[in-house]
Length: 128
Image (cartoon, rainbow, N blue to C red; front, side):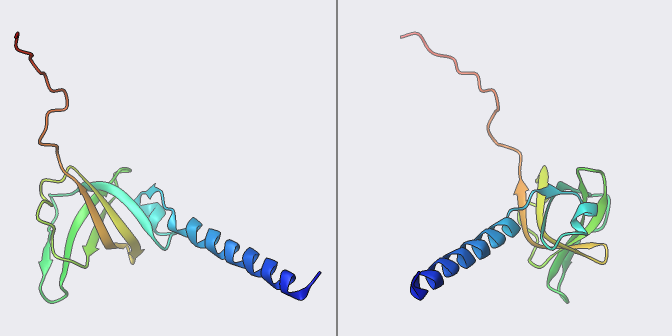
């Protein structure tokens, strides 16, 4: 075989392997706070614990609150942005980030708010 073909095949295999490795690391399933301790990036789904203190710190420019995951674990979450406008209305939260010293540091936060539409709308058709 020619050296150019061997180099080309090796390059394609190396690039494909690197691509698959990075793709595998980017796929994340939902975990609870305890499982998030063993991962570099995690998606934790839960709800806001409104019985605990929450607020935005002007000194650190971070919003912090407590969240209860689906397993019932409560942890402090630090979000490096201001509090979202509809935070209090959210029925479910998804925080994306990592655990550090028993505190979850969120890079992103997604909120599920209650729908303003009826789930089972009843339509009445008028007779023509």
